[in-house]
Length: 321
Ligand SMILES: [Zn+2]
Image (cartoon, rainbow, N blue to C red; front, side, top):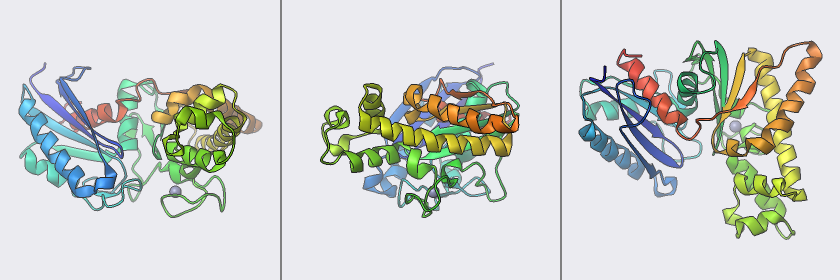
């Protein structure tokens, strides 16, 4: 029955993605990705969202029955306002749902933070599918997460549940974008890995420099590639990141006892080198108390997972799961 279309919108810190799907199809009828450009301010990003949403609505071959939004930041408890985006200064208190509703009168609109939404996408289309209690952790510019019971994310009393990126793993450690110190995000996010490398390679001979060209071009991917090629400095950074990621995972598993943990986000393109040492640490610590360690796996749909999650929200909003 493909009598309806659904629209998914992913408001990320680096990209804005829009997807249109007909009925229960598992492929996009239309998909657009444009740069968010946080350095140019919030106004232009909101303008782009409005223009592209209008374009997508016009392109829909069937009536749009629901719209889902993945917001890259904190979302209020009513799930209608984007409160703040630590990696996008200025994108604050945006009545996102109302804004989109005005463009599509009468169409139900639903929003959640992008990590929760990605979790829903993972539960519907990825490795968490069919699991009763799953944890999804996304490691990209920042770190977010979702706790999913029967495919539905736990919200928390203020809508801030599963903010695993701001779990403290290193007391008095590195400064985090949230204002606290020693958060997992301040060590293991893509931004933090790149910054750590930039600080340490200065004036030193490292493959990281050769691969990146300039210090500004160092990314988490460069560091992991250099580590894979045997660069000592890069290996030390990967070891440190994996150590704290392992502590984070052990804490999450101790607290929630999930039956699977799935990790997505751009940094997980380097899961081969980052994940095994983190899992070893989890196994070393958790098996001490006799508990079984659940599978800890990299997502295989992470490029579009938030967009597919937004689609799942759109379908739920329309009452057509
Ligand atoms: Zn933090």
